[in-house]
Image (cartoon, rainbow, N blue to C red; front, top):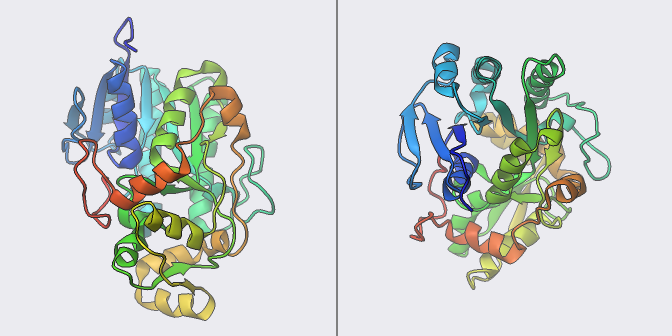
Length: 326
């Protein structure tokens, strides 16, 4: 489909979701700019790339002038630096949306809910107690307050743990695929026998674009349509089977073992606070978004193949453990 007029979009961040958003928009004929600190080329045909520090509110507001939608697809690379990096970045993005008049579409996650009992729906309170969940809840509360005050038009799309191309070491399943593909036993955080939702990055992008384009969807959160939950062990086994590889032994990293590993790993120290997500069923209810946007998730077997091969858009296979695009 080709748009009748060139709608303009500014995508901040070129990780897996940002790259997919840019590709979707460019394919339909939109005017798309991707902003990253380095300005590097995502490889998406027809997209402009600019080098920009998105936490510089004035520079970002200038870049957003004339844009119909500003997409927050940023993902600060160092998980241990979120408290330092996210507040000024989010404040800058929100200010740019207010000053430019662009719809502000946010790539979110499920952290704000904290521990839950039963499937997660969008009407759950943001009740996290860990510092990352509290942070993400606060960033959404700030954006929603601006929306309710009439200063901005905002929407947030929340996804569960990502699978698909480009996720690499940032995904709970994809990070262990390289070792598992060599037949080695792997460790996964928490229990590996409980149902858990996984979201393909392309489905997250599709939902973000649809929510941004729908004025009636603004002012709330939506859950990305995702496949039926699988256990961690089953998800990994399915990924391996999708490229004709046998299952491997999966060990649980939890309790004292996780605490000991966290002593020497800053990343695991951060993840330990979120370990509750792997100690009980963690299931996303996506029925509202499916009904509103008519989006069905990419079939699970395709999600698994995309995760196993981690192919770029040109079809050339990359090593599954290659760093994700950020």
